[in-house]
Structures are given as structure tokens and as C-alpha cells.
Image (tube, rainbow, N blue to C red):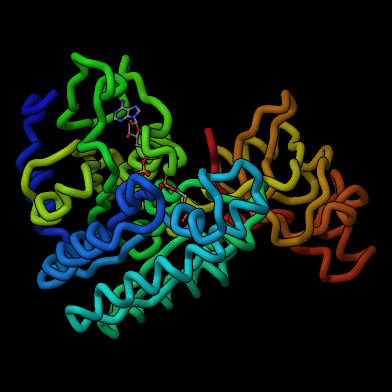
Length: 379
Ligand SMILES: Nc1ncnc2c1ncn2[C@@H]1O[C@H](COP(=O)(O)OP(=O)(O)O)[C@@H](O)[C@H]1O
Ligand SMILES: N[C@@H](CCC(=O)OP(=O)(O)O)C(=O)O
């Protein structure tokens, strides 16, 4: 696929010119074979990021909290249960950030730790706040080090992998480039441990991924999603207008300087309305609202708010502000949105006009069930 696309040069130029970059590094690139953080590898990454900062603003999304916490807690491998993973993350996150703080301090650079959950990025007030904090850190010359807030995230609301988190952070901070660093130097057309597989140099769109065997985590055993989550993350970022370079940590300097390395994913879409990307990819629906055919047309085609008149059913236990799926009469999900009512309030509103409800129950009931600004169409 290399060189087949006429706009390759233009995309490479964009990569070189990127002013704000999100770099994500996986656990497998930060740990030693025997477990624990590898100070030399952290230092090597930090040196590259410090050089990149001469021309760009850099946000680092770093995994490694769980991996760093294993040895200090006497664990031989990554535990499967959430509670022990969270205990390891709690111990490891402190060690990880201490390591980055010391390593960046060699260059006089301050780091700021930012721990995010899915709620922080799918609810409007939290989203704005996360953006403001990251933007301010950059403006004040500090380097944000982002990770998921592993110790408080429950199974339902976890990202679980930092690849998708990195794609969403790239969108959140309005980055012009996402660099995913792993222990493998790009996307291969099959499991790179098998002889005969080849690195794919460019992915111009989903068609270039047909027939590619995208496998799970590698031999280090400390990573989570393998290539699957990296390709998903690249899909999210490129659809939102951000090109992605996927390569190994050892090629980080090349990637950041715009030299040809790893796999380059071209952007496939334009920058989308801010928070809605998070709503589609970061939130877990807490319930479902069933819509009649007229409401489906209004929401999907005319992009209007969802009113109680178009509702025919409610499922799940959710509170006002939670993400819910909007499903059609056949049960197919057509959109996702943040609902303005608790689940228990909705049954009495089904099929009623807002005017009728306001007259009967008071002006608070004149509001939309889901406002169009809080709604993302999924089909
Ligand atoms: N098609 C593929 N191309 C490249 N790597 C792949 C592919 N399929 C599976 N992998 C595996 O994915 C691993 C990277 O994922 P992971 O271990 O989760 O890394 P990280 O800790 O960097 O997030 C590689 O080491 C590789 O063995
Ligand atoms: N938040 C977790 C990250 C999990 C994760 O995505 O790991 P990886 O696949 O190595 O990027 C941690 O810090 O251990």
C-alpha cells in the first residue's frame, strides 16, 4: 500500500507541521522483562519528547500503572480481577508519575498528572473542565501525563485500554497528530511473530484493512488490547480529522519529526462537534429509550431534540444526565444521548406533548427528553 496514494506527501507534511501532538505509550514499552518500570526506557522516551517540545506542544498518555504496581505488591503477572488491578494501579501510578517527574526534571520540564474517567469526558461540565486543565497546563509550559483513573473506574465505565483514551484525548485537546507507541513497529498484515508477515506503511481508509489479521496483546503480557484497540483508536482519531502514526517506542523520534516510520493512518473525516465523539465512543449506555417511527425520523434525519411525544418505552435504571441509547421499533440503536430525566420519571411522560405535561405537572416538564446538543446519531 506504500506510495499508492497520491496525497501521501501532503499527509506526511501535515505530520511534520503538527503543532499539538498526543503521544501514547503502552505498558510493554515501559517495563523490564522481569517486571517493573524500566528507567532507561522512560528516560529515552522523555529525551525524545523534550526535543519534540522545541517545535510542538506535547501531551503524553502513558499506560504502565498496573504493570509498575505488580512487583511492589508481590504479584507475578497482571491480575484478572478488577480489584487487584486497581490496587496495582494505585501503587503503580504513583511510581510511574514519580519516574516521569524525575526524568523530565533532568531537562527542567514540569509534568502534571491528569487522571480521567469516561464520565469526565462524556458529561458537558466535566469535558469542558478536562479541556481547560489540559490547555492551561500546556499554556503554563508543563507537560500533561494522562492515564485512566484506574482506581475508581468500575467495569461498566472503564475505557480499559489507553489506545482509545489517547484518541479521545487527541480530539479533546484539538491535537493535529496522534502517535501510538508500542513494542511493535507498526501494523502488520498478520501476527508479526509469524514469519512472512509484512508491515503496512499506510492506511488511507477502512478498505486498506480488509484481510489484515489484527491480533491481541503481545508477548510482554502486560499490554491490554493488542492491535485491535490500536486500530480502533486510529479509526476514531482519523474519522475526527487527526492523522495517526503507529510505531515502536524506539522510533518515537522519527515519528515526531515526521520521518517515514511505522504505519501512517490518513485522516478520513473532519473534526466533529466536540463532546459528541466522546459520547459515541467513551460512554456506556445505562438504559434505552424506545422511539416511534416519527421520532426516529426527527432525530436521525432532521437532527431535532427528542420529545416525550415520540417515546414508546423505557428500559434500564438511569439518572438524569446519564448516557442512554435511542432505539427504533425493531430494537435497533439509532442514536445515543444524555437523558434529562431519571428512568422512574419517564413512564408517565410517554407519548404526551410537552405542553400538556407542563400544564399538568409544571414548567419543569416542558423540557426535551434528550436535547439535540447532547445527541449523537449512530447510523
Ligand atoms: N497485525 C498485527 N500487527 C502488529 N502487531 C500485532 C498484530 N496482531 C497482534 N499484534 C500484537 O500486538 C502487540 C501490541 O499490543 P500490546 O501488547 O497491547 O501493546 P501496548 O502495551 O503497547 O499497548 C504486539 O506486540 C503484537 O504482538
Ligand atoms: N490504565 C492502565 C492502562 C492499560 C492499557 O491500556 O495498557 P496498554 O495496552 O499497555 O496501553 C495502566 O496504566 O496500567
